[in-house]
Image 1 (cartoon, rainbow, N blue to C red):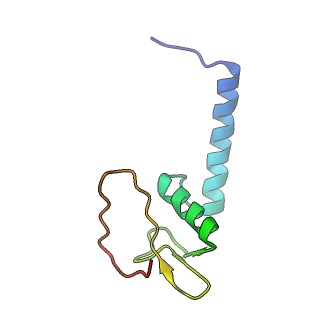
Image 2 (cartoon, helix red, strand yellow):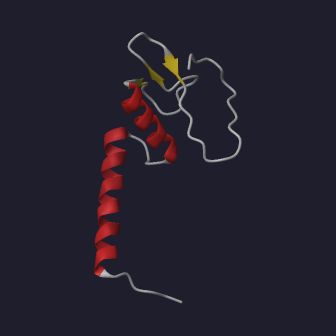
Image 3 (cartoon, rainbow, N blue to C red):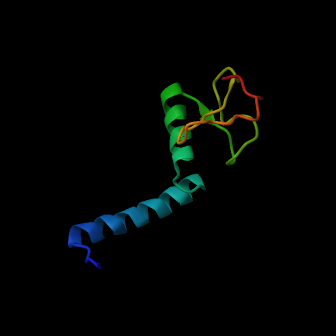
Length: 87
């Protein structure tokens, strides 16, 4: 059964589209759970994210150069197949 969006829903949708476009422009990546996890971990642990999505081995470094691989769990199992990281 079709339904119409109310004005508040339309406004929220339009804001979301603008935000997603800005996020993509600023970070060079789509807003997905993986990047949210990386940004959150970097902020909370005072880490510097490495350039480029899908950097092999690790996602961030601390001030001492220790390498961190950041994972977002969305499934029962997480397969880590590259162990070239420190934390």
